[in-house]
Length: 310
Image (cartoon, rainbow, N blue to C red; front, side, top):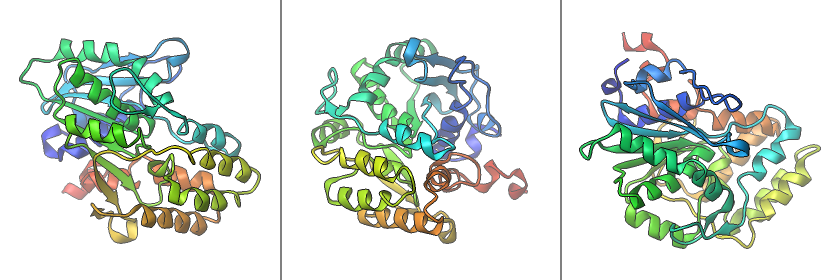
């Protein structure tokens, strides 16, 4: 499917999905269908991996008819409850100063983007000309890294025309948001009904309530509540314009003014409806797969079901 047949935000969603084709162990990229055909990289994208213990950090840098796309791979939730606390812990880190980024940002995401930003800059320069627009995207942890990476690309003299993130956790404090949005004024952040990750690290008014709720999860509840409570002294805020994807019952409609309170309520409702099975609740709401909220909210049905275009 040519990339001009679908909206840009959908193309970037598909770029995020196909970036999961980078094997976290070998670093080898295998295009993922149907997403890679929508993105329509030509030539094949450059695959960037961190080294050593940073090999988990990876992205694709490729050219298509829309410009140069930087798609940073994220991390998917684990399939078993025992691994969930470790996965959630990755979203909770004390804010810190990070090079020439404004304000304070998540120390883990700072480290992660610094492990791959130099080859990203080199790849963008190798692929492009000043006339090419540069588009940066990422899902989950990759969304947070996309925001940081876009700012660093600009600082390196590479203007970024658009940043679109999916399921991104919060990246930095109020000073980071103010400084970032002066440079990247048009970021769009997609957040899905029932997805907990875009609410992390939680803001102060909701920490106690989320911790109390998660403490009810069998076996791992106390760990999860303790992780949520770590954010008490922090002040993480989202960046960019919100595109909240409503539930399937509401047709995956986009709401640009969903409050944090309502998002927390949606998560609680979704968790209860799923019998407090937190692994499946988070996995389903956080997924970039066909049929999930993110792909359904950003893309026309023809992307995942070609018959619907007939």
